[in-house]
Image (tube, rainbow over all chains, first blue to last red):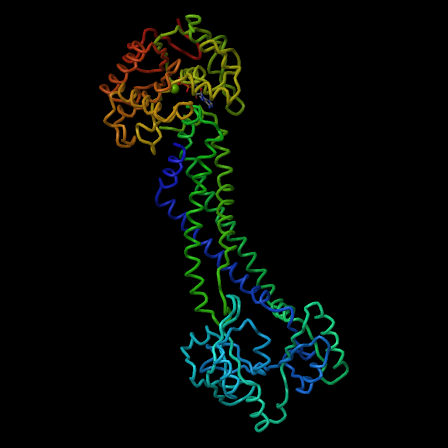
Length: 385
Length: 227
Ligand SMILES: Nc1ncnc2c1ncn2[C@@H]1O[C@H](COP(=O)(O)OP(=O)(O)OP(=O)(O)O)[C@@H](O)[C@H]1O
Ligand SMILES: [Mg+2]
């Protein structure tokens, strides 16, 4: 159809103007895609958390410990299958910029409660055998170029001193949302040392991780555990890992809200840019549209020309933006791996990008095409010369 | 089917424009006929309403009152979209500034009105080639308007006007933007269309020389024909 040829030729008639518009749309789509990825990364951590894992912590705050003696009591609660525990260690590797999460955990039960960590069998058993061994996620290992057998020293912040560990195992995530940037070592190693250096800190647990048989029993089990320690010096709060993580996230809820609003603003900007370009081009082509109408072309066909041109421009911009989103996300992940252990562009983000481009293309051409259709032919023809 | 010998019958046409508070009467109760096969030139001073009248005959503008019958069809009774269809079938347009679509080649510009007909691709190509030959531009068919001289562009425009085999050809100052030689060329072509294809032509012009090509010259002055 000859109209298609006109659309394509028109879209690239003013090369500089079209290039700038496409670029503006691309940058905006890129920004939108990254912002959305930040949000979905945030929530991905919730989606991966399991409904069959409960976390028991001190009722006052996560920073207050619980006695190790709770372990056997929690084990005896109905529907509890397995109990593990750990402490946030908070060690620093060389400098603070190298931040990553590191925990002292009861290794055997912990790894069993996290089947999403995939570990080579030999490595698993050598990690479990070596009291000074540690296991780390694949991304963390790659980040620092560690190899199995390497000695890694962390400087304690909560627990002073230099702590030496040997890398015995590397875990991979079962899917891309699993955090592969964590560091776990034997709780016993921490506790033995504390018994000598600071006995008051020994036999204390930061949190218990409770595996239950049936997710439907979560509320009941949590209630029973907390009832066990009610009115004791260290009361507990037990919740599912999901709500635990969500509670964590809700602190940043306002930030997410701000990001959402910024995303909307970005869309409005794209619309303004494309609408401005379309207003300029259709104004210049008033005479040409009048000629087409003179020849018998309908208002619908004129609208098709203008809308098609707007769609080509907005879709070119969106495609360029999408192409840029992947390397940009990669760069983001490199730069901010401490905060975003996973940073993957979701397919639905790409679909939304394309949806925005289509809506913007249509919306940006509504007013110009309405004007081009409405203007009387004799009037339009007078604008030539 | 051959009907009355008049191809255009204009009765009591009035047309005025409103400019703010004022109403400017451009055409005052004009009535006249155009015979089939006529080559009519309309002359008159600037602002006398020549273009306005031509636009009414061609169905791209509407009169305030009166009727215009072209080829036995009262076009003042047609709706906007009916009128568009009627133009596509019946009227060939030639403008002062050629008004070709710059992003299309000469051949594509000529092809443009044919897309609104039911012709097949092959039929359209045949028509386009015939029209190009008639205006002697076969060699330039793949050239874009910007690669053609003014006279050549106007020849393409004539080919585009004639390609649908219209009932009537309207031309608004077709030589107004051309040098003498090109103007002669264009007028010669129009005479040929009139003589060989028996096309009725209504041409608005300032140029007495151009008007000499026509059979009949009417003078419009202040919205009325002077005798
Ligand atoms: N859309 C409009 N709004 C207001 N006035 C108009 C409009 N179109 C034409 N006119 C006025 O109507 C009158 C006749 O215009 P028209 O274009 O028909 O003149 P013309 O005889 O073709 O003149 P020219 O030889 O300069 O082309 C002029 O006074 C013009 O200013
Ligand atoms: Mg005029």
